[in-house]
Image (cartoon, rainbow, N blue to C red; front, side, top):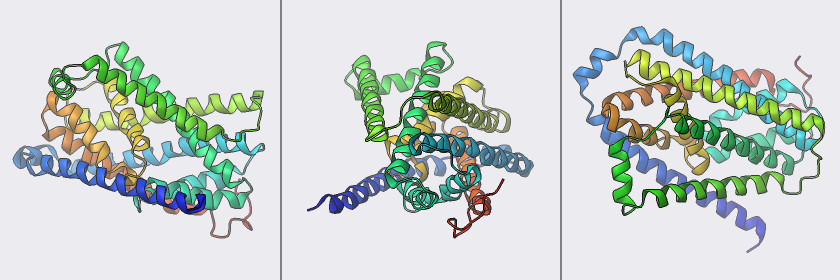
Length: 322
């Protein structure tokens, strides 16, 4: 079997594994949904939330522009020259919806298809994707680490006891295993990102990486703020902003650990419910993360027509949008 035949098989295998994990996670979420106290939920959920949800969708759409711009910086770094800003943003935003059908991998495939029409090679587009992930993981781990050290984020005693039971009482060993897995993931993505890398770390490229890190910080804290308002202001959960920022960061990075899961559906919900249920009970975390999922899915659907404005079908002949 040739290398070209192996790649589709690996991609298909990742997608299948992602779907299996998503289905298992969704079943877990389903069990929590059917056990929600409906009377208590009706007392909390209100039509008055609709304006807030619309506003949160607008914030999500705006913050996705941060990620699109950051990806442009990485693609320019590898390509060796500047690229049309609004075309790149259009590619990133328009292809967000593809991560749901059939998996996150389709988002990458669509990006490759459109971006190569603007000049960058397929190799550079793929490498820019991995380099973007490297910085996301590094910034994300930094946020979680600082939140943990400062006491802003911690696991509940009940969850710690469950982990001890699962790991045979070896909590430290379990934690080191998670850290080792994270380190290996970073090395893997970094290797993929810098494979055949020929550009030098000049001032312009370093400046691009610094701007990317600032954009990622803005994205994580911005989306953490949205999730905080859902949990704290709409549902009345006594939870701190910095805790929610760390929580969102963990769930977002979960999509890269399981790249075949379509849009991280089920996986993100599983993480939130698992971490928050021992503290707040299962109902509010389940309701909150479902609302948050509605915000992101509707936001991704809205990004499709918005991205299409800057990305006509025949982009090779399209004039630059200033």
